[in-house]
Length: 291
Image (cartoon, rainbow, N blue to C red; front, top):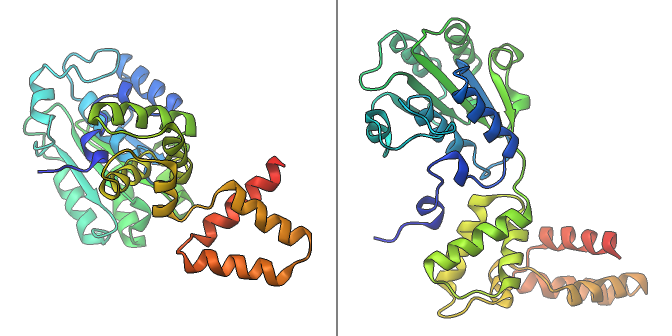
């Protein structure tokens, strides 16, 4: 059964994560020095590794013999948590479980000691989606959690979180992954999967992904499905509606010459071909900056 690339190549330890260097180093040091916080808050755009790092951290804090902050993959705890089938690592999607009843259920269960691991870890994704009542219920738990419980909260919209919640967490700001790092990772994946692809195509995929490692792998997946042989930069342009620099240059020429009719006609042609006009605007601005 085919598995999506972003799932197949999801990092298993901190060393495999693309980007987020300061986050990774800080977490690894805290595990090595046994200074593990009771609650972590991960901020940042989608697809840059927040949930992935949360899962690695949940295993690392439970590892009996961590190696430079990473799970050893050999101890009983690592083996039990390898496929996240253990009941002691609980992942909750706050987008669909955002009510006060769901959080109260957590509060009622936190005092129960872990069944298999050292710590019971709650990973709450999209935590900003919780209702005000749910936040209040969560606050009580974050204030004085039992020693055997750890919380990892993740969100794409930190401005929606109450200050009372933020102040009780160790906060990490995740950044977009650099285009260079995405290109490097895509090259490795293509080599592993024996995918024929031009370097220019890899660069364009990394550019379109806009800092999202998961998005870049999803784009690559779609390109593989579209192309029967070698993936070219033109294939990527066709799929994602990205104009060439030459086409964008023609738009600029019409604009500079005040040729309004020709400019509108070319934009209409781009739209009729399914080109992404939002992307076109961004690329146009980038070209002007680089000129």
